[in-house]
Amino acid sequence: MFFHPKKATCIYHDKRDPPIGTILCFRGDPYADVSIFIELAHANNTTPLTSNHNWHVHTWPIQSASDLQPNRCASVGGHFNPYDVPVSETYTSECQKDNTFMCEAGDFSGKHGQLDIPDDLALVSAKHFFTDTTVSLLGPHTIVNRSVVVHASNDCSLVTASASPMLCIGHGA
Ligand SMILES: [Cu+2]
Image 1: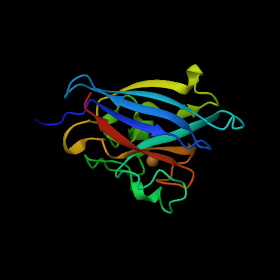
Image 2: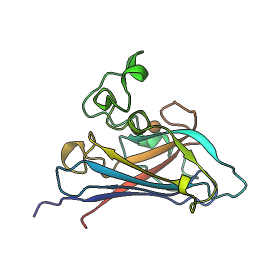
Image 3: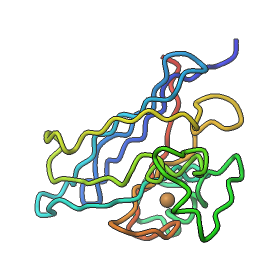
C-alpha cells in the first residue's frame, strides 16, 4: 500500500539557542492544502523576543542535529524550489502573500511572512498558523524528509551558522 504521510514534524530541541519548539505540517487528505502549525520560542530565558526571522524549506535533510557537526547548516542546501521559480532582482516584489505562485515553494517567509520568536513557548505570540497551497506532503514535490530552516533575524542568506535547521519527518497518522 502506498504511504501517504499526513504530517511532517520539525522539532527544534537545542536547549541553548536559537529556538525550541515544533513546526507541524498537516493535511486532511492527499490533495488538501497543507496546514502549518508553529510553536517556537527561545529556550534561553535571557534571550528576549527577536523579530523578522526568515524561514524556509531547504532542499536536503540536515545531516546532524548536533551543533558540533561541521557544515551542518550547509548540508541542507538551498531553498526548495521544485517549480523552478526564477529568483531575480524583482523576486521580493513579486513573491507576496497574495501572489504565492511567484514564490519558491520553500519560501515560507515570502508566502506567509517573517516570524517573531518570543522568550516563552506558552505565549500566544509563540504560536502561528498558516495554510499553504504550494507545498505538498506527497509525491516528488513533498517537503517530507527535507528541512525547515529558521534563520537569524533579518538574515536573508541561504544558510548561516546561526540558522536553526531541522529535519521534517513524515508520519502516516
Ligand atoms: Cu533558508
